[in-house]
Amino acid sequence: MQWRAAGLFPALCVITTALSAGQPLWQIGAPDGGDREFALAPGGYADFKTDGCLVIGIDDPKRDWPYVHPGPADAWAGSRRH
Image (cartoon, rainbow, N blue to C red; front, side, top):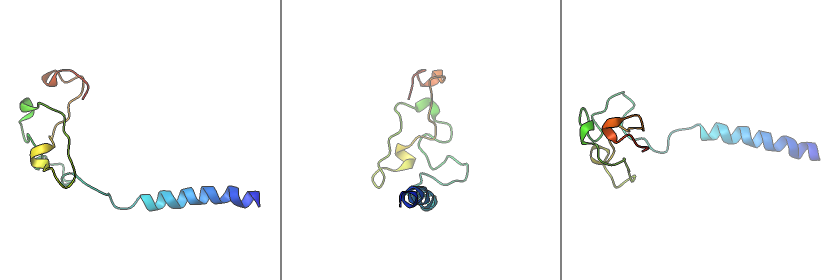
């Protein structure tokens, strides 16, 4: 009986993993390598002021989600963690 229970858990893990590999729940922008559907694109990175924050169903990526997300090595964005 114990070996059946022990075999059930890995089987459930495999099934759950397979089911979770379906379609994305949400996507911001088109997977086309372009940036024009995002804020500050195509060259407005110098206007970057705050980190992006997008509320699904309320915000508009063209206005609220910047195409650029700087890191600590980016002096133009204050050389800080974002």
